[in-house]
Image 1: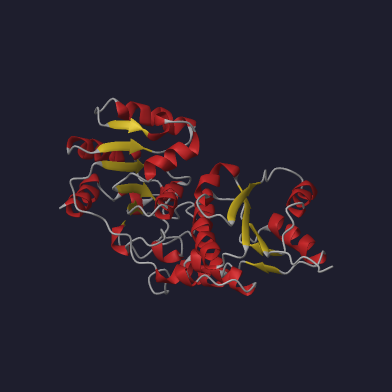
Image 2: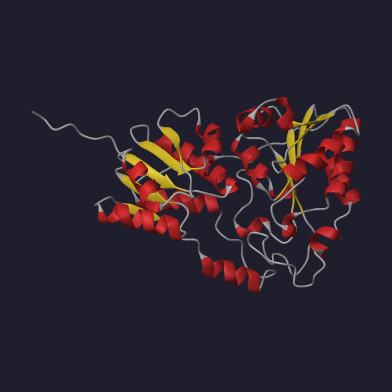
Length: 329
């Protein structure tokens, strides 16, 4: 009796952050479509499962990263991967990939190019742009023999001229180094609402929602995206209908990019050339001040060494409004 040939099954590890998982979804969708005979599973946050829908040989396996590693390993072993790609390269994923390696599974892992990152932060004005993260993810899969040629052939997402009917605004970011003063973004929301656009506000934290609820009273065209349905899937459905998303350097920029929606993004301590710019987004749509000290942080978590966050505080509402008006014309 002939032995059944097992279908290749690539297990990818990426437990956080939400934006990085969104970037991984773009790469894995391309790789899954280019390799229809291979199964791809991303082990990551369950709430982002809708990002991986629509491709029959791609799925998300929800993982609670707070669980003991032995429990996570057992649950992942049960889905019978033939290959393992560590797209996170942190201590937890290191131990998991090592366990799979010791059990005879081919393993590849993400090289974060930390040396290039250090050189960029040391000499931000003269250092070249880093390799985009989505390309680093693709290289990791290539080490296992899985190519994704369609990933390289994608054009810039076009932004249609106004008037815009539906605009998403994601005014918050996780770190101070990425956070433009919210009250300034509030004025952007009012301007767009007065121009006739339906403005959807995106933000997940409890304090953020309290702030945005006050914005809703500014104009009848402003509403909370989370108030139109339940859960991330409902918010993703709204993102798909947008003419444009306006955001910080945040997860919502990557969610919109994954859906093929153009993004106008606002940057402070971080910089598009550090590798985390939205996939297929036009570099000209990054609103930022030219400062010799930028970027001073890859992820925005470092405190401003000047103590001023001038990269964000000196970016006025009028400057951003001027950019938005130009994009609409």
